[in-house]
Length: 307
Image (cartoon, rainbow, N blue to C red; front, side, top):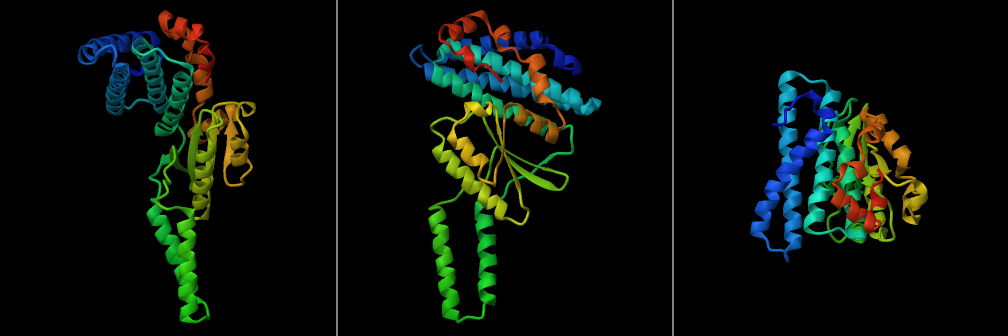
């Protein structure tokens, strides 16, 4: 049985055995429910099962750490190890029921990076504190009230004031026909400064819509009294990103960092050197089962196993 204590941060093999055993139990049940042709359903179910195992372990560990007064860094290192091992087994099990192609695998590895980095802020060693982002409806209402108050103070006719307010309303209608989602990947406060963060594995040719959204969202944040700091943290090195990244970097409203610079910023704000942790603990080729490694290598997918 797996022992939950502060040494779990160094017990990768024990965690791998635990997750694989749980995944095998779950897979047997999943295969009874879904037929071979229902590979999508099987894949979704195994991902969910591994995630539930991870969440249960982290909840148990967090509760015990609170009772016993563990060191913050021990907690974070344990959570990182549990999460990484869950990713390894999730990839193995998903590949077993539905072998990866390059599009699915490259996207999946990228998707796992963002929540992994966020763990440093959910368990910070610095004074960083998470906060709830504002609602767009609240921001729109506040800005509208401010402009209305300003127009009301102008020394012009009432009809002219009404006309100005009407045109202001038209501007909002041009910005969006609905509500804008101001929630990004991460929102934290440190030293009386507020930061909003978007994580990206990399920028490809399909990022035009997302780039425009990020420009709009950052512009709204920068217009608020709090003067939020907008950070873009990208896993891929700069020469592996395209013009959409350069658009954001040169916008003047996003502070954009790639590769090693992105990891350095995570360390600066969270207090933890996640790049060093990855260097010492993440070893996809060695940690994945041989069957999975063979499939990835045969299909040239192991090139995406770079964090």
